Length: 196
Ligand SMILES: [Zn+2]
Image (tube, rainbow, N blue to C red; front, side):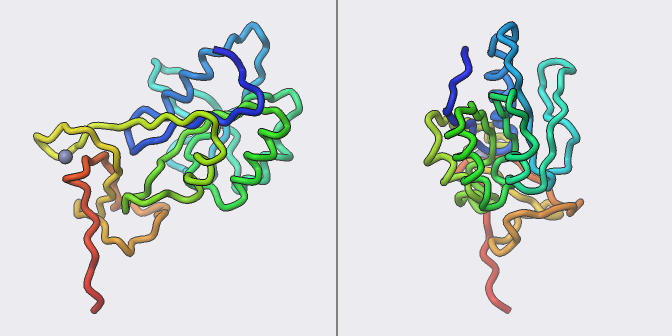
């Protein structure tokens, strides 16, 4: 496993599909003796966890938390040639231009994110990022509906335990009643509420 200058590698899939773990595994495969200076980046919006968590034991990484993708252009040091970006789906429009410019500068970017939102539709700028990626790996989880255990490519949003309606916002922040779980195509539910 080596640094790939100018290459975007993406790991996508639903909740609990192991995509972040795969991204971390990828960078852990880099030869540290080469003094690879890497940085972990997360969008500020994702405040569920202060660190990029790895389920390899207790190892975790202190990420650079950015509010806007453009911050990466000023915060990265010239020595940092490998950038790992988690929760890519939460970044605003600027993420595509920023990633492109870092790639043109010869950085190796390893990203993880949800490819689809709770509606089962493309999430944020993920399709654009997939378009400029050289390598894309799709991961799936296991459907959490009792007794199903089928392959789950999608993420179900639940509000108070019920499937969230289609017109629920793409990104919910700080709503304690919301939950997410991987679902198979048969059990992924997005009710469309009749206009009242
Ligand atoms: Zn299922």
